Image (cartoon, rainbow, N blue to C red):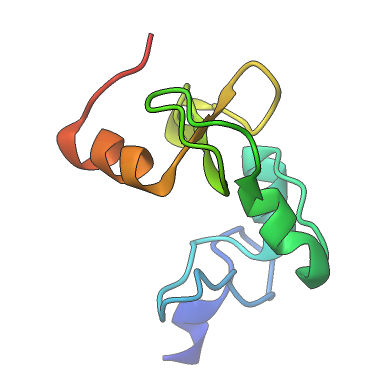
Length: 103
């Protein structure tokens, strides 16, 4: 059972990256960063990375906003300027639940 929590890259014996909700990604931190081009902040800065204090582009709410990628991660979209917009938590949730697209 323990082997199924190892990174899926051949020859890598690192543990998989936890999603924090009891499930795991398929890669360890190192290979996850390489695959998706992500930069992980220190635990102290994770909240800063996850949220921005911009205004929601849909409803105009100003407060802690989520960062949303226009090009999805599975399609190669990265958290880089030009691919990320700010959405309030409500609009972000509705966007994903209803399958809306932003142009």
